[in-house]
Length: 258
Image (cartoon, rainbow, N blue to C red; front, side):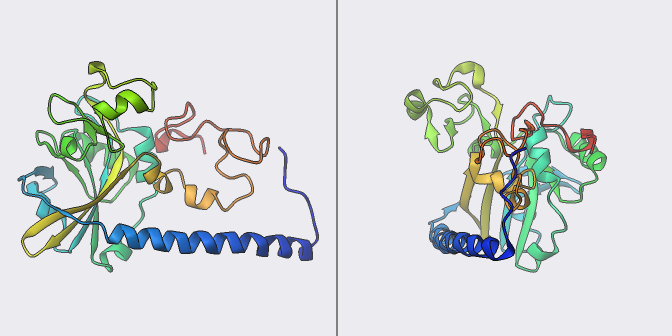
């Protein structure tokens, strides 16, 4: 390990104040970005999606639970999988009680394509309490680009079409979208707003746009060792664990030794 230098408390405070100026600039920039996010236009949702939950079949409007805002975790769990995605599970493992969201007029749910019985069994295994619904048999995952299959809906990966991916490449190969990739499950988060009886889509994000919700990153970024991933600076500070999203050390939450 290459630890930070040891200094006096006075020297530490001077360095901390210098960093604080950068943190405040980032906070202001984040506030501006969040304001721009709130200024995004919205799209009316007209398709009658159906979801399966503990009380049977419900609509998208029902997922709001009587609140005006809905946040959906697009949770990777395909119908033929025996377990959910380990990376999505790391995000799910960090979802605590939802009272603070509910007090702010917002409902959070997870949605996956696997049949509800699989979701319920896996949720019980993990000890999670957040609502989790199955979109099996509906176009919801495809329309919001959490399942990519050009036989069902036009592919849009990180907001790039198949034509754009021919130039930019898909993240895991660097090449264009190919037919064997159809059916790929992707993580993401989408937000919806209900106005009267109408539902509107206001926001979606994918890739690194959801990383704050994974692996305790918001806490790890405050520490001296950080995320313990190979790309981090300063080099040699900590041994990479390989537990980044999609990394070789990633496990389901109940499969870690500690």
